[in-house]
Length: 182
View (cartoon, rainbow, N blue to C red):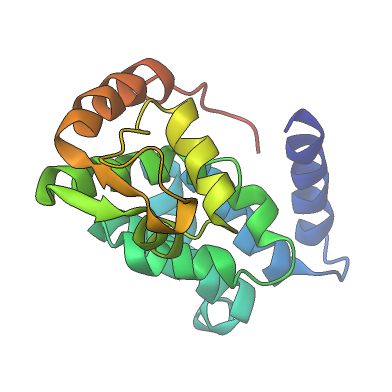
C-alpha cells in the first residue's frame, strides 16, 4: 500500500499539471482507498469535488456505488460490485472485503437460526465452498449443524457463530486506521 499511495500522490500532481492519463480510473481507485481506510470526512470532500462527467465514468460510478452500498449496509450489492469491479478495482477492494464479509456475516447470523454454506458463498462473493469454509474457520464462524456432511450440504449454525464473529470483528477490524497519504 505504501507504493500505491506514493504512486497516487505522484499521479495527482501530474494530473493537476494537466498531463493526460487515466484520471477517472485512478479517481475510482482513490475513492476505494478512502473506503478501505474508512476516512469519511476526506471521502465526502473528495466526492463533493467531482464533476458530473467524472461521476459518469464507469470506474468512478463503480466506486461511488461501492460507497453507497457500504453506507446503506447493502451487502448484497457490495459483493456483486466486488465481483464485477472494472479495471483493477477488485484488487483494492480485496483490502476491505474481509472486514465487510465479517460485518455481513454478523448481520446474517443474527437474523437466521441456520443458513446454508452455499448461500453464504453466493451472497458474500466467494469463489467456491472451500474458500468460504476457510474464511469461516479463520474468523471463528465455522459452526455447522452437520460438520461431517459434504461442503455442498453444510449448514451454518448461526447462534453459536454470531458471538465469535463479533469477537473477531472487534479484535481484527475495529482498529483505528492511520489516516493520511494522498
